Image 1 (cartoon, rainbow, N blue to C red):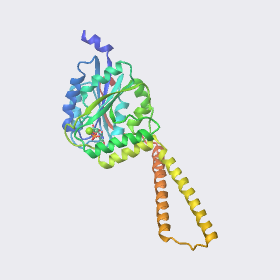
Image 2: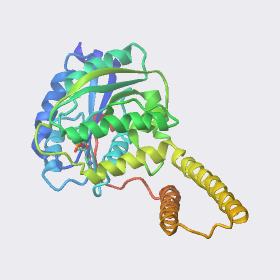
Image 3: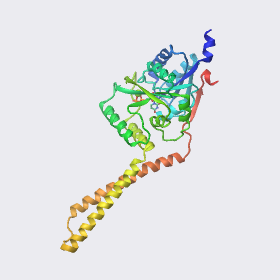
Image 4: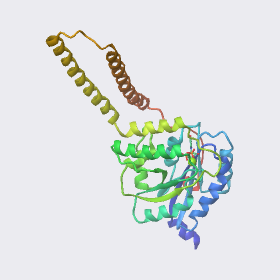
Length: 320
Ligand code: UDP
Ligand code: MG
């Protein structure tokens, strides 16, 4: 009788990217499987091994051997989380997909709640962090400010304080997979596709083991990526500052000429000259830098390389 039921069941794909997460992967697996047990839905797990140097792939393979619901996408090297996620999403077969970190910072126990809202008809269910445990106050404050800054600047309204943890319906996923840009700011792309979106809130746990794979520079990079992928405002700002300083310069020149003609003032003010030159020089370099940021991205997009390369795939029963 059980078998009859499973054939009509829908499939939920859980996409889990991992970079050196070997130590916590078994715990992740057991909590995940436990969390979806009560749901009337088939589970598919898509692991992406993002070029780990530890035993991540061995542990994944062991789980794969005893559980036919697991697919492993083994990338040829470390491509970074945004690309690893994409690789996983490309291989998901489910009617809905949940994106989740393997370090157990996103509690798998929330998945039933995400699925419930999907059953209510939502295409995208975001999980918003209302609290972040075990993260430095610097990270918390900078991320708080960044999400608000980005929200104001970007053309797409990217949900604040929302990581990658979310559920997408097949419709939303298919739309997302059409976006093949190389500079991928996933949080922005998730928002870009639109559809009916809703959110739940949760408290983000501490990492189960290990430490964050994101250095300060990685995060700064990601922040730039978010800005430049979803807004051309910095470019416009550069032109506006240019126009402003040109006009001020003109006014200043007029004042000097008039002063000279009317009062015969000898030219004075070496210090103010130096200040002006360095100030304007600085603005020029800044504007050039901003243009360079965008130009570099254009360069990378035009190379048309594949997003990632796969070393090996071990397929779940759903992909056969
Ligand atoms: N991750 C990845 N590739 C990377 C870096 C991270 O697949 O190059 C995975 C990592 O294994 C984890 C998730 O992305 O499952 C989030 O990474 P992490 O916990 O280091 O980031 P944080 O939670 O500190 O933002
Ligand atoms: Mg984490």
